[in-house]
Amino acid sequence: MADLIAKDAGLSIAELSSLLDVINEPATILALDYRILACNQAYQSIYGEGGRVLERTCYDVSHGYSVPCDQAGESCPLKRCHETGQRQRVLHLHNTPDGEEHVDVEMNPVRNAQGELVCYLEIMHLVKEARATPGEGDGMVGRSPAFSRMLEMLRRAAPSDIAVLLLGESGTGKELAARAVHDGSRRARGPFITVECSGLTESLFESELFGHERGAFTGAVGRKKGLIEAARGGTLFLDEIGEIPLPQQVKLLRLIETGTYRTVGGIEPLHADFRLVCATHRNLKQLVDQGQFRQDLYYRISAFPVTLPALSERPEDLTLLINSLLVRIPGAEQVSVTEQAVKVLRQYSFPGNIRELRNILERGMLMTDDGRIGVQHLPPECLHVAEGAASAPYSGFPDEEVIPLDQLERYYLQRITSRFSGDNRSLAEHLGVSERTLYRKLSRLK
Image (cartoon, rainbow, N blue to C red; front, side, top):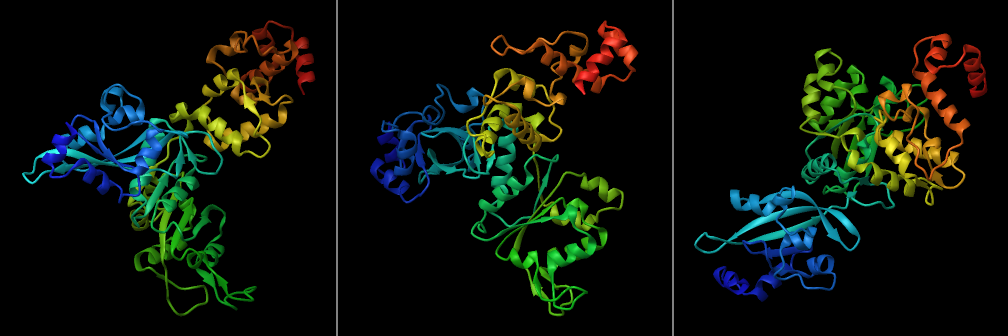
């Protein structure tokens, strides 16, 4: 079958394989029925595992599936390529010797001289900006559908110089996303400069961004290079851009539109050379309607908006994030989280997102004496296992995690007193104890 397709394409299997070897990334030639006809050395080294890959199906090698990806609940680039006749790209999780990893799959139709579709050229672009397994480093981690959709958007934007606007709640990892855009761009060898817009006054913002000349203002004893100059050839990341004062928005708009700027106290215009990435947790459209953000600036920075999912929107990633953060937190390499503590965390909404999860783990690491973060080491706000827990005994602890009764009472009282809106007499009635008994227990609690 492979020989027939190669003959129809006017090439031998050996010629197909030699053509693939000029491609640095893993690449294959696929038959119309998903079988691998040829592959390069890069593909063989990652997916071959010392075994045979030719004549096996792509979905078997990449995923271990017995059916095509679209029948296993995923998007199949080969099927979409067949239906449209056009090149397709899709982000997948593929099996590798190091575990599952994100791969940007590119599928190209191959036609013979008569214009007939005879096979497909598949190129695997390995995603280095994010991991799907726990590991060291500061990059993004995730494998949920919401995370994969966000990552695919970042991958599509990265190669160009288009302005990217990162949207999402506080603590969702917007700076990591901005770094991923930078690392995937042609400017990856250049600097990545972050500007924290929320902590800068009007005068300080202008001086930090544009730089100043000696004598420009009181205290300017020398020339200072601005962050725009520092970002030359790289990426300028404006974090919390919604906090920039209106007067400075005008100057930022002029910079973006003209590509030139002047230092504070300077005369000659200077040329800027950076890729712009912005981020905010605020609703910029609403700020525009309220007159707090310039509409023309909004359209300049939002050419390619990408929304980062909240942690509550990617519950499948919780365990992965916990294990990854424990590797990254200094001193927590040998710390683990009990199964019951993970169950409790799964029911928590995480208003602070990943940043809050890290704080919870750092606190738990200090509270535990045996290296295992249990339910008793979680903050009180995490201990609402169910809405009805206030009127029922807490039964969330597993048999293997024996908690002293006085500790269990302490956890329950901490939680219920923070939520109960009535006075102590009413609370005592609800708990079925005297007001004096409740007072004594609360005194011990303090």
